[in-house]
Length: 367
Ligand SMILES: NC(=O)c1ccc[n+]([C@@H]2O[C@H](COP(=O)([O-])OP(=O)(O)OC[C@H]3O[C@@H](n4cnc5c(N)ncnc54)[C@H](OP(=O)(O)O)[C@@H]3O)[C@@H](O)[C@H]2O)c1
Image (cartoon, rainbow, N blue to C red; front, side, top):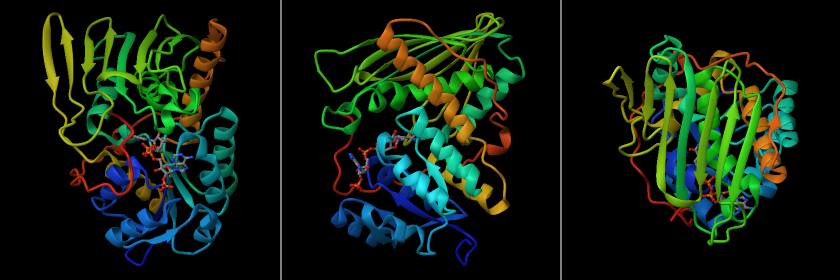
């Protein structure tokens, strides 16, 4: 039962950077969503955010009570990757819908348990792939589908930033590191641009002189059927770069920024064919508002969201194969798989970007 205004009522789980800077302001841009609760380990921060947004504050030890309160329809889970199942699974079991931050979890087993909980209860699970509702990304998928670059042959991407050594991303091993955190973007992009699942994986990883608690710079190669290939490099210890090229038999597509969000960030792309370049302009939108508006509409209209547990798990199995490739130094083959759904233009949402609020009681994850 949504609120009296017919809006889906969200609890925010984890009051970190992405919750405070993006999700919470984004909700105010939607027509069908509102927030009623925050779940946090920091009561003082929770009280300040509660005052700003009109929320009830719960500690992590009060989570079950929050789920049973009758005041929440959905949970937005934005804790560190290794604390996703802990909150997503009980919510789904209690019939509370879950918008779950990417990547799904820190192991395939935990991610499968989350997907199974959604299947068993019928509560809806959406992985927060904000780009699946972003107009520039959807236009790129559509352009490739229409054959604008001929047959796609290869994809290459670089995605890097300097992450603070103190953030959980840099202190908790592979599953908090650059591959699950940032590599999920090029993996998800190329799977959707090729409309195919990889069949083999190779990777090299390095620990630079920063000596973080994970290998901080990683290069990955993916093999697909029909002679298609992808490669990408990710880093927690480099200048911020965010781009990809997709080259086909009759043209090349490139986007930079390709995966980012926020002020001034539009996912505009170029297609070059026979020496001529055309630019496809995309608007700056509130990607968090867009994904939330889409998820709430799915809940209200009884539809299953496209970026579902299957989509999240297809990325998770690639992340796990990359980990094995790094550990063994050997090529990892993957079972042939197909995806039952793909991104569609009906997912596009163009909501104006919210004003960035002051952040309360947190340190930014990146330098
Ligand atoms: N979709 C996107 O564009 C995007 C962007 C960034 C991050 N993310 C995802 O969102 C999730 C959160 O990332 P973030 O950047 O918001 O991280 P963050 O700023 O470090 O915040 C994480 C929050 O989780 C809570 N938390 C609970 N247990 C924790 C623990 N053991 N260690 C550290 N924090 C803990 C804390 O909130 P309380 O103090 O309130 O308990 C903390 O502030 C990750 O899964 C990440 O991959 C997605």
